[in-house]
Every structure is written in structure tokens, then in C-alpha cells.
Amino acid sequence: MNVPLWVWFAVIGFIVLMLIVDLVAHRTAHVISVREAAAWSAVWVFFGVLFGVIVWRFWGAEFGQQYFAGYLIEKSLAVDNVFVWAIIFTFFAVPREYQHRVLFFGVLGALVFRGIFIAAGAAIIASAGWVLYLFAAFLLFTGIRMLLQRDEHIDPAKSRALKLFRRYVPMTDAFHGQRFLIRKNGVLLATPLLAVVVLVEVTDIVFAVDSIPAIFAVTDEVFLVFTANAFAILGLRAMYFLLADLIHRFVYLKLGLAIVLIWVGIKMALKIDVYYIPTTVSLAIITTILTVSVVASLRATRGQQRQAPSPAVPPFRIADTEEMEALEPVWGRKRVSARGRPDRPDRPDRPGDR
Image (cartoon, rainbow, N blue to C red; front, side, top):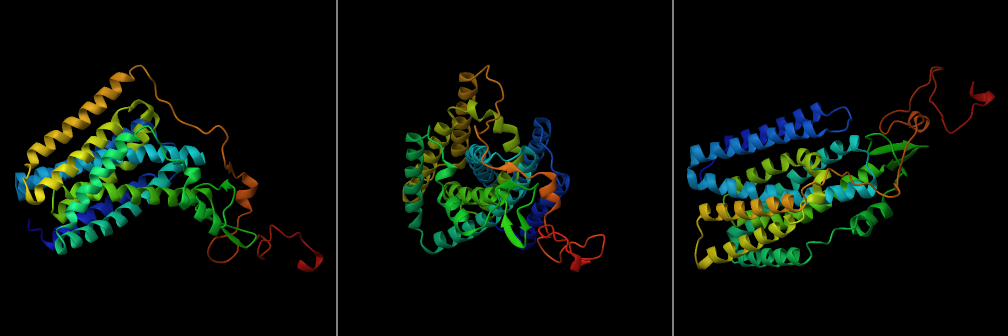
């Protein structure tokens, strides 16, 4: 597959442009409604499918099918991310109006880290083809483990990343709007929102370890691996707000994802020296597995309504107006009061100060 350098720049430029549009559209903190989430989900899916059509048109049906197979794998595995994000947001009791900001930076970091992983994976495969056997074995192991542990969920309280963050990074006990950092009494502090971003990034890196080898099972083209990942990830925020209150209904989805990972592991192992399974067959099998798992889940839980999870006791509070007004600038000079001297909210006026 011959992809000119300008096409790479054009695709990356489009991704950056859409991230800017998304950031501007959500610059004001507000609760994302289901209708808004559905609209943005439709937009991201449209662009993902449109790009696949472009690949099919200019590079042929085989590469088009490889892109769609990779896109479908990444999109389906991303649903597991949504479940984990819901658990993290519930654990921290993150106000819904601040969740989009967290996910924006989470997705931005995911794009960067996955780009690094894809480049590293392609270089390793090019220099040592035998590593595909390791990838195949890892996918089989991961799929079987997910199959056996499909009813288990992560516990953020036991996260090593969170424990390290709280040990080495001074953190306040309250959310201060959408701020990640605040300065109080001259001390720079992280807010719980920054801890959430860190945990979201760490979990995505863990998921990338599964998803990157999975997509290399259906295509060796770095351009297709990157673009399928990028367009799948771009729609994750909207997917979260669309599905977060419905995660209790997808009871068989993890079973389907486990079978998909096992299937792509088998496909990768066979294609090395035994038999190359046509992309059309792989795409049909993956689509069937995911469709059956989703339909079976919805049928098994029909009648259940949307249900927003919430912690029994919120671990962090919301800073009040007085605390917000007393904050010092994180960067730059201190605020200047109406009397023309720096504010000292922690120090009462003395005669000598006047």
C-alpha cells in the first residue's frame, strides 16, 4: 500500500482540526445529554466510515476491508474502555459536567500513546517476524482470561497508578471546577480531576496492549492500523455519554469481545506460515460475533431503563464559592486587589500594610 507523505499530513491535520472543533464546542462545562451524545457519535461514525470508503475507492477492496475490520475491532474493544471509565468516574464521583474535559485529554493522550505503540509494533514486526507468534499467543491468553473473568471489574481504589499519584503528588480534597491544578497559600496542588485523567490514561495504555496486536492480526499496513485506531478513538467520548447509563444491559458483550480476541489470535497464528484467512471472512465473523453478543444482551435485559451509577459516599467534595475566589493564579503573578497590592487571602490586614 503506497501512501504519499501528504496523505499522512492531511489525515493528521484533519484529526487535529476535529479535536479543536470538539474542544471549542464543549468549552463550557455542561452535562452531555443523550441527544447530544448520539449526534456526536453519528458524526464520528460517519467520518470513520467515510474514510473507509475513501480507502476502498483509492487503494482497492482488500485494503478497504482491512480498514473496516480494524476499525470494527478497535471500536468494539473501545466499549470496554467505556465500562472502565464509568467505574472510574463513579469511584471519584466526578460531576457529569466535568467528565467531557477529562475524556478530551484522555483521548488526546490515547492518540499519542497509540501512535507510539503502533510505530514500535511495526518496527518490531519488520525486524523480527517471529514476534507475531508472541502477539498471537498474547491475544489468545488475553481472550481466554477475559472469558474466564468476564464478570470481574477493576477496583480504582486498588490501582497502583492512583496510589503512586496520591503518594508523590500533593492533592486537594475538592473539585475546583474544571481545573486540574490550583494554587492555595502559595502551594501548587492537583485536583481530583487530574488524578482521574492520569487513571484514564493508564487504563487506556493497558487496553492498547490488547488492541494494537489485535489490529495487526487483520492488517500489516501501518497507515490502516493508525487511522482505524484514530477514528475509533475519536468517537469514544460521545460513545461514553451515550452508553454509560446502559452498561448494566450489555451482559454478554465481554463474552463477545473475548471470542473476538481469541479469533484474531488464531487468525494471526495461522497467517504466519499456515493459511491466510481472507479479510472478507474475518470481517464477517467479527461482525457476527459482536452483533450476536449485543442483540443477546439487549434481549436478556429488555425492560431495564437507563441507570446512572453513583457512589454511596462521594470521596471528594465540591469547592464552594469562597474557596474558588480565594484561589491564587497557578501561573504568573498574584492577583492584585482594588487597592493596588497583591491579595493575601490567608493573611489579615495589619496597620503596616496600609
